[in-house]
Length: 429
Ligand code: GLU
Image (cartoon, rainbow, N blue to C red):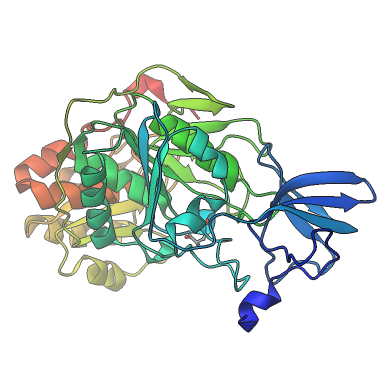
């Protein structure tokens, strides 16, 4: 037995003779407070020596101080496979394409460190109950933290989704939460038609922690992937308790807290719906699945996303525009930057660049008609981007420049294509 492996074997008194217990085994644990049955979860480097974590049937993890542990059934997924397939009659097939992040992280249970999952079986270990929901085809496409995502990964992912939708009803994509909304926006624009739901899902706490949100998020995502939603969406905890998840439109969602389980919010719009237990409830106005899939997978990476701040130098602005085909500016308030910047933008636009203005306020709508700065910006050709989120505008501009001529890009950038812009009176905080 190698040392990494033996480090994570629980050295406690067991009733079944000649059996050690390992993460993944179904066990019965006797404690001072009673007897509990569940799947033994992995320890990680911060685990208390005396506490073990059990995943109960209802999906909750609990920490216990064991007096005795009895092994009921050895883990059945000991042999690692790169493609996991589970089939049962009368259930739709759902593909789970893992890209990494915390949701798939605990799973590196042989070392205890928090790393993205390496195998498909590891991936669904956090919620074995999903096998009751759908015929699961799971595999790992990338094994990265989402801060390492980039447009080339988005393109690869989009092509893989298109392949999977040939045989699966829907697709679930476990993803790091940090940049999940960039990926959801990119996929939203790249697919002009979808034959099944494309659902991104993440977790703020890894699955080996008692407070993990991974289980409920993943199982809720699979439930939405079985629906008739023809859009890219993000499914995450709606509140800090484990009562329901929200279904957020891929172009409206944002991570609004560093650590809370309800970090994801729909901005300037309502969520598309919610998942309560096994009920998927849509509010109004979602796009339904179509017969086929249409993918426009070109992206022009020469786009800057520029956060303006007081004191920003013209020199820095010039450098951020150099060699670019377009820029999205996160201006102050209604969409402003210092007057010093205006001639620089004017030159950039004259030379063929496309500039869109969003607001660092995040909530609310850009308006370049109110103050003199705004009017000057509009006059030189800066495009006000209504209530579109800055990172969504950034991805949209990359997509437009990759697939359309400049005149068309200028026309389409401020238009609502995928629910990313709402009509004037519909602003919801
Ligand atoms: N920073 C990592 C990521 O975004 C981990 C955070 C998470 O998955 O929530 O992939």
